[in-house]
Image (spheres, rainbow, N blue to C red):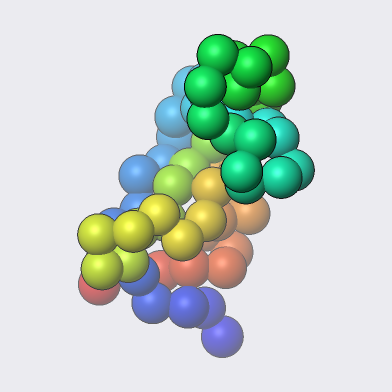
Length: 66
């Protein structure tokens, strides 16, 4: 069963993410050294918070919007 979210933004040509595994390291100038790119990406948003990012296929398999 898919999780319900408020908004899905999909088919993003290149979605740039902070690729660092440790959340505390995602700030400051060093964070720019660990960028990740998801081609054909998507973002799932619920209650004004990003709950997931990934490929459009993966997000649409796991989430549906209202």
